[in-house]
Image 1 (cartoon, rainbow, N blue to C red):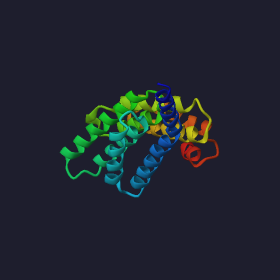
Image 2: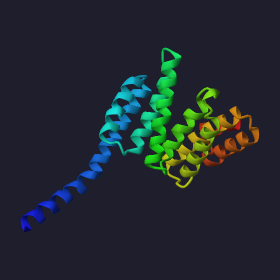
Image 3: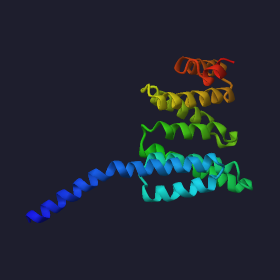
Image 4: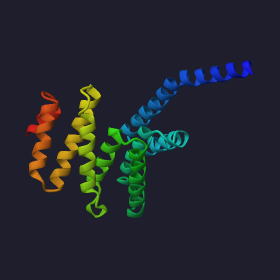
Length: 193
C-alpha cells in the first residue's frame, strides 16, 4: 500500500512539473501556426491548429487562432459556398474559444475582427463591435506591452467597426483611446489623422 501511495505521489508530482512544459509546447505550436499564416500558408496553419485542438480541445487560445485562420481562409476560397462554409466554421470555432475561456481577450478580439469584416448579410457587425469592446476592456486591465498591443488592435478594429456602423462619434472616441493608450506610436499617429 505504501509503495502504491509513493507511486501516486510521484506521478502527481511528475504531472505538475510537466504542466509548464506542456503549456510552453502549446504556445510554441501556436507561434508556429502564426508564422505559417504570416508567410501566407493558411492551410498549413489551420492543419497544425486542427491537430493541436484535437489533442487539446479545452485550449481557448489554440481554438481562437484556429477560428481566426479558418475565417481568413474563407477570403481565399474558390467559390461562395466554400467561403460561406469556412466562415460559419470560423464563427463556430471562435464561439467555442469564448465558451472555453470567457476572459480570453484574443478570443473576443479575433471573433470581433471577423465579425466586422464579413459581408453584411451575415449580420455580425453589431456582435463584432461588442466583442471588440469587450476585448479592449479585458486588455485595459493590464499595462503589459502585450496587453497594450492587444488593446490598440481591439480599438483600431473597433474604430473600423463603428465607421461601418455609421457611428462617427464612437469611432472618434475609439481613435482617441488609441492615442491615450499608446502615445507616440505609429498607431497613435494613424489614429490622429
